[in-house]
Image 1 (cartoon, rainbow, N blue to C red):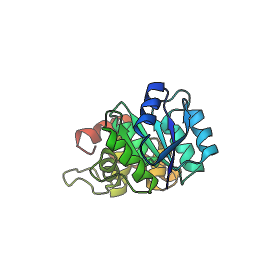
Image 2: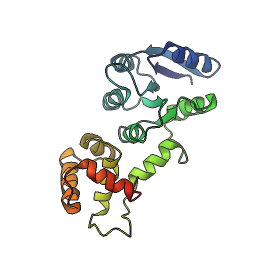
Image 3: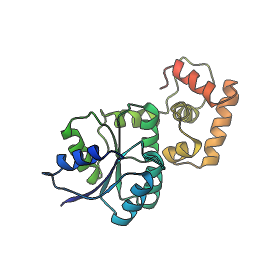
Image 4: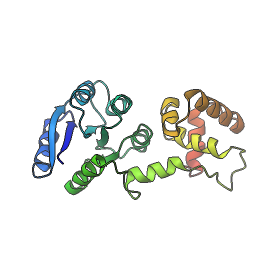
Length: 210
């Protein structure tokens, strides 16, 4: 079965390169988008199997577009691509339901394989950047050497927070309410005697939680 694909990237050379790369594959590019708003509207119109989208798009960025698309079209798999190996981008992509996260320097065969795997509904490989980040965010074990009395769930929330995720994104990742996330954040800050999220994030980084 031919895979219906939309490519969203602000650079024409990238879009043309991907079209050339996929010319001999069982993939049909049904539309292209330059901005985040276009990516959302064209995805809703064409309902592709996969959307391949740059994280940095004019207007609505790729991660905000990802959230809107996953909310309205859960069957469309979204692959985020970027020239930056940003842990925050990667963590947000995991939390918001991306199928994969690819660096633009990846070999052509990696892109092809990721598109086909996403279309089949397969998760990112465990040894990929996406798979490793998901495993990290799923961890609920607390470090044995820490004397701060956080619960395992609070450590998990702290790990998300330290990657720069918002309360809404943490809620989506952990499948809990935003109000519950707020309670966890307030509790862990109080237990750690810290004034804000940045201080807590630095603490987590120094202890190797991320």
